Length: 110
Length: 112
Image (tube, rainbow over all chains, first blue to last red; front, top):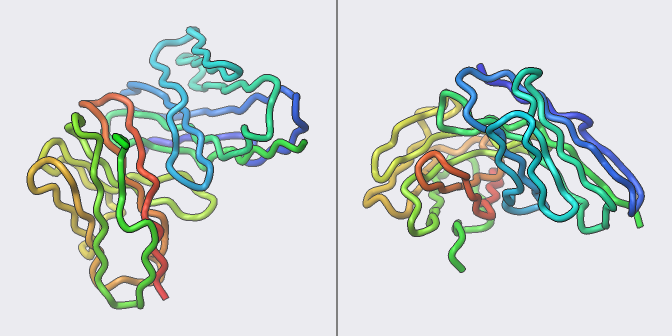
C-alpha cells in the first residue's frame, strides 16, 4: 500500500521566516510527486516533480525531489501571512488516484 | 470560470437519507476523480473515470456509494442510506490523461 508521511504536522513561524516542509513516501511504480496548498477550500496545485535533483521554483516557493531517499521538500522564503494554509504532499504511483499525506498546517504570525 | 465546479457546496441530511453530489470538470479533461477528506486528514481516493468508464474503485467505496459519468462530462456521486461516518468533504478533481489533477472546492456533507 502506498504511503506518504509529512512533517511537521503543524508549524508556527513569524512573517519573514523561511520554512521547510518535508514529505517522505513509499510507493510502488512511482510516477510523480505533487504539492498542493489548501486554504479551507479546493487544494490548489503548486508543483509536480518527476525527476530527482531538479528544483522547481515559483516566486518564493521552491521544491525538490530525491528519488533515491524517497523524499521531497517544499521551501517557502520570506513568509507572508497569506502563506498560512495546509500544504499537502501527494504521490502518483501504480494506481491512478493520488495518495496524500496528512498535510502540514502552517501558520504565519504577523 | 473554467475550473472544476461542485454542487452543492454544503449538504445537511439525516441519517438514512440518500444524497447526490455533482461535479463538472474542466471541459477538455478526460479524467475525473472523487476523493473524501475528513478533518485533519489528506484527501483519500474513492474512484475515477476516464471518459465515461469507471476504471478504479478504492476499498473505501462501500456498496452504498455509486458514481456515474454518463456522457463523459459531468459526474454524480450518490450515497445511499447515509451514516454519520459519511460526514466529510467530498472533493472532485479532473485531469488530462495522467497529468496534474485540479480540484474543485468540494461538497461538505453533514449527516445528523
